[in-house]
Image 1: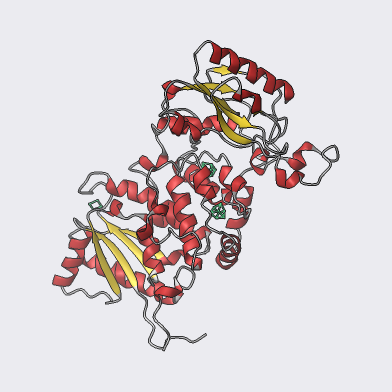
Image 2: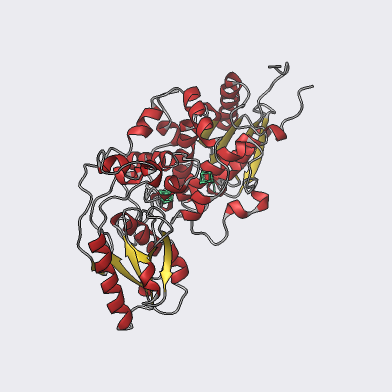
Length: 304
Length: 148
Ligand code: SF4
Ligand code: SF4
Ligand code: FES
């Protein structure tokens, strides 16, 4: 990790000196090893606080929306899974490709500070401390890059990301309802999931509209939590790259990925396999159709 | 729990202006009956129905929501109902995943000439929802009438 960070820094300094880039978007050292934060670095001096360690799980692509409006090019450190989000943002014209220098950085799997808290990391396997999203890693390949830094990648057979969705589907409607009530009722409507999501990039969000009925910070009623989560998942359906950021940032540890993955699983099954962000300029399944698509009544046949 | 004696389901039907709404008209003028519990909301096209409309209908006390549009291929705006078809399929599957009975949601294609179909679809849907009973999973208590 130390080596990778050094390589990134060297390259960033060179590019800054030659004037090819104006700033660097990376992670800044925190107070502890486990809390680096996304940050812009405008000068070589500022770069002294740059870090790339085992806790740099944060996906930086969304910050490029803001960076696209700034003068000059921004160098961004992109891990393999983040590259999907970046492609999606470019497809949606939210990020200006011309304004970004994509430095593809290797990722050995990132650690979850909640899992490592108070633990001796030399005990047990790295796998036990990985972020949940890393357990379903999409692979070490970057889908977009201007330059690549070589380094160690995650050596782990990914889990089946739909396993839990299938388990839930196999339950009875009442059991499913109880499961989701239990999960969603813990939501404090901090909006962190929306704020972090690279697919949630609307300038005016429905959840900020006081007339939407779902804008309140503290939900006064069960229903609002349901509505918020259904609508949010629906708004990103077909565009969600399954980057796992929403579940990662949720302070209540609500398994939001189980909502997104349900949409992904249904889309794959009904409209053909689709991975958002696989390449730029793809057409998302929800802004597309076939005259032969299944009727809703047929798609809903089966279990009660 | 106290049960309302004379309970009848509240049904919201989103009907596209060009086919299904006209189909409802035809049902009326040809004296085909459908339950008065069905409240029709006219929309320009089936694809105008935002998922939020459906959830809000449930929130405000609907027990079932049905979306009616032109037959695939006949949409006044050429392709609106094709998009709506995908959206509604995914949304309804999601509601089912969250434990909402799938009988409470439906999509039907009803043309302006299908007054009889309109009335039979509505009768059937009201029957299904009546059998499911009151929607308690998606309601907002603040929007409910007090029991007595
Ligand atoms: S991050 Fe978690 S607690 Fe915050 S709004 Fe999203 S689901 Fe709710
Ligand atoms: S919904 Fe969650 S997993 Fe999907 S793109 Fe947004 S943050 Fe990533
Ligand atoms: S106008 Fe009827 S479905 Fe589009």
